[in-house]
Amino acid sequence: MSNCVIVGINWGDEGKGRMVDLLTEDYDVVVRYQGGGNAGHTVINGKGKFALHLLPSGIFRDGVVNILGNGVALDPENLWSEIRELRCKGVEVTPDNLKISHRASLLLPWHRELDELEESRLADRKYGSTKQGIAPFYSDKYQKKTVLAGELFYPEKLRAHLRELLEWKNLTLTGVYGAEPCTEEALESWLRDACDPILPFICDTGAVLREARDTRKSILFEAQLGALRDLDYGIYPYTTSSNTLAAYAPIGAGLPSLRMDRVIGVVKAYSTCVGEGPFVGELSGREAEKLREAGAEYGAKTGRARRVAPIDLVATRYGVEVQGATEIALTKLDVLSYMDRIPVSVRYRIRGEETDVFPFPDELEDAEAVIETLEGWTCDISGVRRWEDLPEAARRYVEYIEEAIGCPITYISVGPERDSIICRNARR
Ligand code: GDP
Image 1: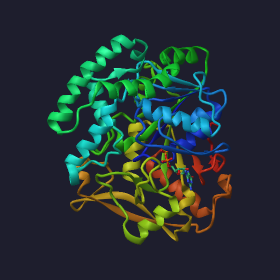
Image 2 (image 1 turned 90 degrees about the horizontal axis):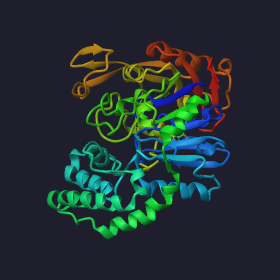
Image 3 (image 1 turned 180 degrees about the vertical axis):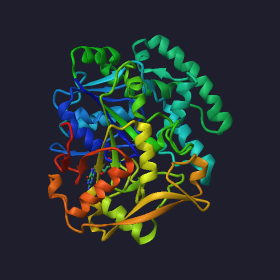
Image 4 (image 1 turned 60 degrees about the vertical axis):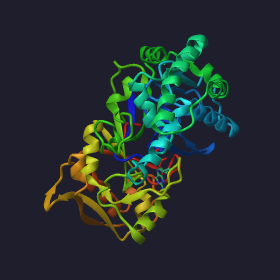
């Protein structure tokens, strides 16, 4: 049995989805343990091209049990439309291959609206929320003002609970934001249209995981976003509202005592970032355009153009440390093939002083990237499948990063397709 967690080392969008899709072949259970439908994995496989928002990427593999753990922001509306979309494209989603924790909290109808209202109030001081209601959801979860998925099995008690929450939340909607109140009728239709359909998937996923452990099944945990967006360890307040770290996986999944055997950190061969906040070494103009185009860097959920920069070794080393990565998957190496010389952000300069330590968030605003350039390979590498067949300059680029971040790079991805991968001493 081996348990493995796949996490982002940077700002998210590193290509975790394609790594999970590749590795699910070796796992019996795949679990999402935090976050919600605010980001998206893009997966391309024999069944087509898919943008997954909440469903675990193991959903495409026959025989894999997929779990949405208690740590996720369970948005019944979005989940149900995602399930329907997959079914339309011929992917089977049944209570046998999808199980939702009865301890997962529900994202309620007003969370998305509150997100929008707060972002408009902030105007040009906004955090860059995807307006999926994630921040209001997690705030309410910690205030104990939301509903557990398992409560859907107790309709009478649930209605009384929802009425209480409605009364409380309308004080904010109308009093703070001057918006329309939410109504009991709106809640009723939400229960009928969004919650009833997902009822058959809800169960005690802790028990499913315990049984998987006891019968020596292998479990794969899949994170959303990356280390620099972790609520506690990321670039606060430009973080997400949940913990994106590997250490949180057993807690958010439903089996807190579980140990991880492998932590695969996914690093992109250059940097991208969605939303606001400091982004050291950010490229602009023609240079940015070219990289963005080459990497098709537009958000899976929002279509927003991503900000781009050279790979940031200071931030990446920090990400590797806080994730406790045991190995690295380096993705999108093929995207850099057009560059004669490849810029790498090797250190930060903060008010004239150079450092290779990732600083406190406030200091980041003043950090500039110290750039070195490495030789490019300027040829198509997307068909390469063996390490020794990569051009020497590409190997040197990988080895340079590996040395700088102090963690073995065991996978190198050279295309979005499932088999566009070079396994280098990986335990596959
Ligand atoms: P995730 O949220 O970490 O899974 O990342 P995203 O799905 O948002 O972004 C990764 C994007 O890059 C997706 O569109 C993938 O299909 C694509 N992708 C992943 N790996 C590679 C790669 O090695 N090369 C290229 N060209 N595209 C890749």
